[in-house]
Image (tube, rainbow over all chains, first blue to last red):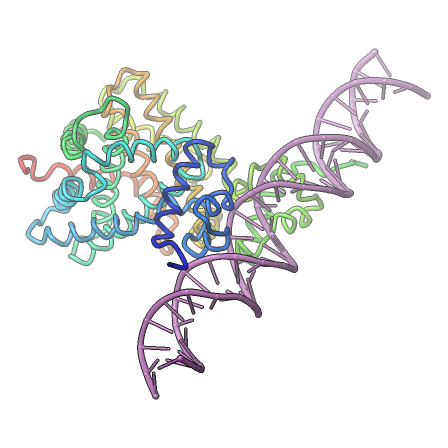
Length: 196
Length: 196
DNA sequence: AGCGATGATGTCAGCATCTGTCATCGAGGC
DNA sequence: GCCTCGATGACAGATGCTGACATCATCGCT
């Protein structure tokens, strides 16, 4: 006889995603989510800082995974290449980006795109990641503004690649899409070297 | 004898910025802002969709300015170069980025950086700009993912340049900073063409 | 066994954000 | 002089979020 069901946080996340998907973000109250898993609104706020965060709490590990991947690329000297390698490492290694997780990511993305406040939070998480990667590069001796440019470019590539990965009908792996985007960005910036 | 003071929206924006700067975002209620200019909370929400928007309503014109600048670059064929020209045009032409507006931009940036919710809104505005520019490029015949990459790269460059422009001690013009960042990005992506 | 500390949860009060609805009333047209 | 219009005020209410305190199984210690 247990007093509380375990994994309260995970149950809340699951219930929240389902309710947001079926009913909409605005039409789902925090009390709805909490009661769906037998808890109260107050407890929800003990696990998540606000209503939106229930969809983003996993991003903390995500950010750490990126920093770890970056740390593994000690040998690389060119910052853009370094970021590219870290990106490639994460997308082919990190659980959430495997093929079996794609349907879940698609549902989650659908929910996020359906509400502005959720998009804002997602953008902030990406921004936070870029800042952290920029700091990591700087600690390695990469100067500004190159460190920020490399980090921001990498995160942009990841974001666009991820968006494409979860797009309807897309079948390529995240790594493959990233690789293609990387090449396209290089090709684009390589043209007209002498213009203004 | 006028019944209402004119320019209610502008007065609200001014009062909001001052209160956010002196007291903090959370410590300023919407009622505070409204009463400071002789209006009520309800009227505030008739001008601005939410409390944060009072700092961002001008961004509508800002986005239009970018699209206009993009439209003026009909002759250019390389998308990255096109975006670069539009950027340069805006930063040297648009009022808010002239030298005399720098102190105001600095204050505004300080306020935004002091609160996460305001950063989220700013990131959304930048994201919205990138989407609009990507769509404009696509209408010109630029294919995906190049259109999105060019638009996102441009907005990233603008954002990093703007951040630098309002940094303490910075004296270069926004155009000059942009030009430098543009060159740095080209140099960075140009290296190690044969890697991976 | 008994007992106290621990920690997850519940309860309750309260403030702030944001919205719908109706009332008010000067300005300008006729 | 009357009437419509439009900006504003007044009011009620739902929801987001927080602080403070109570509850009560479980765990470890004696």
